[in-house]
Image (cartoon, rainbow, N blue to C red; front, side, top):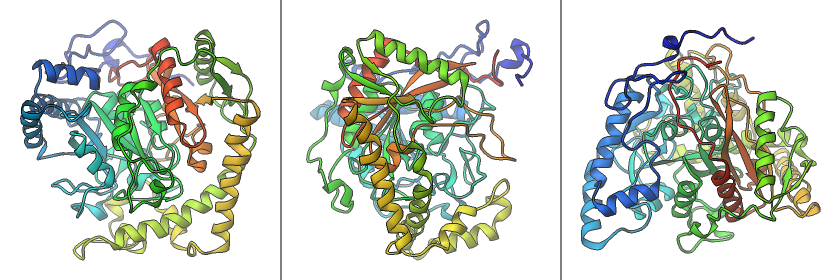
Length: 533
């Protein structure tokens, strides 16, 4: 039942200057006059080159923004902590720019990363859990090292669904014991999706130029879509997972979250690389930084064969379906050949084997990560975390429990027949009999589907009201998907997902960029208190 529409004044959340002005626009929230609002990586570089900005000034502006609207004002709770060394790093990169020139497109660009990615600095890595509060990594995650080499400034760590949303069957996405509940910047009582909730909200709210999330199944693309962003979930193995708190070595990957396809592509290129400590990166190694600039072709949809994956991915939300139909029409208008339907034959056959894989790998992979922590750490195994949560239940489990932890702890080793059978089943069903089957049979460049429904109302009592999404086939297969803003429903963003076969990132970026340029559906948030009519 639709909530009665309140007055305009009740819809407006007043945020302190200087981040957002208090001038209300009819029917909207406060006019956002932040100087760096919606700025792109290319525009940042132009400003740094011209002398309009220094990297120090950018960091200062973003830190003020975080203080004004993340910790005050609408209190988004998207940033767990800021980097106390960010200004020093910015000064060094400014000096390097003057003496030697920029390293590349990310030189001096402030970015935020998810708080399950190790940084060997003064920031902690906790996955949102109080069990790891204060845990300082001994070395940078490989992806962090890549970003530092590219000249990016790590502005801070973002809040997330605790343990990347692999703790409870009744969880609220975006809640962690460390950071509390992340709030949607579009409508504050709505859920930002997860598990990369903080990154999605922070980048949507212009708290940094771009951000990094991680995904096992939906954790990049869902919060990207829910927050009006572009999110790229790459092929497993394009980006190293070394130094990232794990769920599943079969499905885990980091990926970029940004306000434009071009920014996401620039970040993806910098993050990729061969890591001897991650075997997945050595199967098709990246030996030099990837440059996706040539993929940014606004005419790329002309003649492209795009399949519409309808079965299982439409019909759960009528407003979402309307946005999706408009997106298909836009693809057709740009010269794409639409093949409709192009359903994934095995779409309904992946959940059981995926759950078996995740529960077995979570126990093994998390135990390996925690075992490597220093002796001073509070926990060194999944069993230790379960016990910690029980001791600290008032703080750690005030709203939901740890059913997934307990189930995983009971699983056998990765040599068990049940695990190996599930792994073989899921690989075959998601790849040869799934995505690859429909792409090959219909000679398609990519599939499209709604990324998910509009954001649901956050409910800490009952947990997420999740209605549908299209992330699972690509997640289980380890294949890439790219989500792009497709429209809005009552002010809440909806995304369209471009899904392809292994290592098809470049083609997906081409298609996503052409769609983005033709439709321009990214709209910045207005920090409304409740959903407008």
